[in-house]
Image (cartoon, helix red, strand yellow):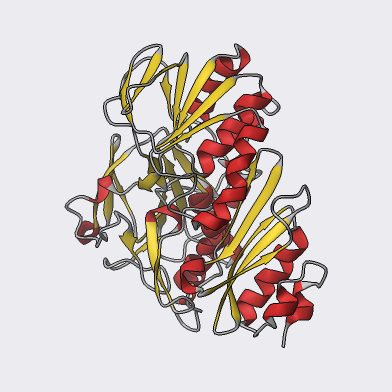
Amino acid sequence: MSERIGGTPERDGRTVVVVGAGMAGVQTAVALREAGFSGPVTVIGAEPHQPYDRPPLSKAVLLGTAEGSAFDVDFDDLGVGLRLGCEVTGVRPADHEVDTEAGPVPYDVLVLATGASPVALPGAEGVPGVHLLRTLDDAARLRPVLERRHDIVVVGAGWIGAEFATAAREAGCAVTVVEAAGRPLAGALPAEVVAPMTRWYADAGVTLLTGERVVAVTGDAVVLGSGRTLPAEAVVVGIGARPATSALAGSGIEVGPDGAIVADERLRTSAPDVYAVGDCASYPSARYGRRLLVHHWDNALQGPRTVAADITGGGAGAEAYDPVPYFWSEQFGRFVQYAGHHPAGDTLLWRGDPSGDAGWSVLWLRGGALAALLTVDRPRDLAQGRRLLASGAPLDPVRAADPSVPLKAAVV
């Protein structure tokens, strides 16, 4: 139980424990104080470091242009206690306790913000020179690899693979990216949208091999299913992440087939007094008519406000959590942004020429309204598009496809 530094703790009769010290966990503590919660708040983090932001790890921290990315939060001033380097091993809702390596921690309200864990490459665990990029320690181990300008093989051509390949090329490394699917971002975007993005690899001097599976990794090479062997002084694995929910085994808290905690429209779990927020939780979206699991920074930023409002207001008047999903990626000199959920769309429109040097966008419409958009170096499209996604306003498809017409001017 945490106490306010320098004085007697204020209490409202409840103690809130937050498991996870990433964006979702830290923002939950901040949002609780902003919402007027005066009781004890404790954030438990598995890593020993001061809580930090993850996006800079794949560029600024990795390249040494920033030593770290600690959140600009004065936890003492907020009266928030930190238990860092403390692994949570179990949750017992019936007893209102979480189990840790240091012993049980009681709570009145529990917020699970455990994030996601990177997927390891089968057969490569423990092999020297194989790296993941999820934590500050991961970035610290990879920084000297880039400084030595090693030959690097990146396994996975998703968002994190492209971002790491970008940083490695900027550092002067020879980079080969291996993707088992037939194209980059196969699980995220349709083939026609990915096609112009695929050319970015060659333009940056990165060798991209698609439709190739890694079957073995040695200390200095990667062996592919085709029989080809790639020299590799370092291998970086970026093949996805899964909700970090293993500590919930036996807790009775519902976890879906995707491994995510099943939360309701106010991010409450199946257990009383237990919430889940960020990468570890899925939520029902009335906007898109399905349950969403969103592994992106903006979700971890917004969800805590709903949790704090529900805790402090007892649910009275609290709005359902149903934001427009949003994320961004900086890769190969481009700023890529995405908002919405395109599987809900049934019409695809292009704005601009993706074969040129100027920016371009892709729109997905459903029922004449914007369902999602992807922008490349067109921040104004993204800003206007997010507002159109929220309003559900119908668009004139001819004007919407004209890059010279502001998106907001395409509203019917």
